[in-house]
Image (tube, rainbow, N blue to C red; front, top):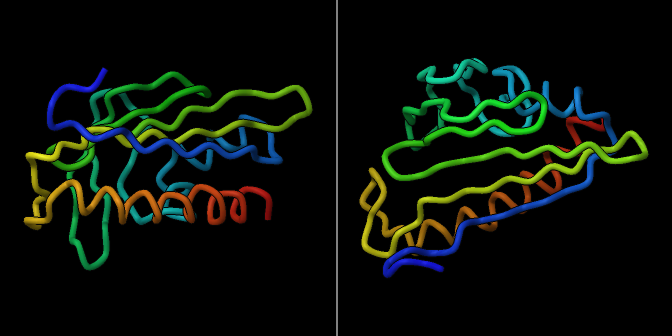
Amino acid sequence: MQTQGTLPEIRKTVILNAPIEKVWNAVATAEGIAAWWMPNTFEPILGRDFILHAGPFGDSPCKVTELDPPNRVGFDWGKDWHLVFELKKLEDGKTEFTLIHSGWDTEKVTEFGQPHSVVRGMMDGGWEKIVKEKLPAFIEA
């Protein structure tokens, strides 16, 4: 059940033609994340602070809050958001990858003064392309 003001999380799932270890390296290392998403200083260490270099939007402070290799990594992004990358090993050497972007609130605005309700729509479309096109292109190359 959603509390008043909250917006639904963004969820994107894709089946990747790669073993879970390869997918984990792509989503839980700085080099991997930079290859399909954005430059960063990520390290897979619980509680570690890192930066996402979001181009024209500047640098976003983040903190690793969940770490369960090779199944799940989660981090706080900026002041309101939480991202989780979930991996599930499938029978045929493939991996199911799910991205969950939560922390949306109709009452809040981003660091740039944009309402969450507006940014969520843009992010939803952006994640669709990143998760369904960029990540598979990188992993299956």
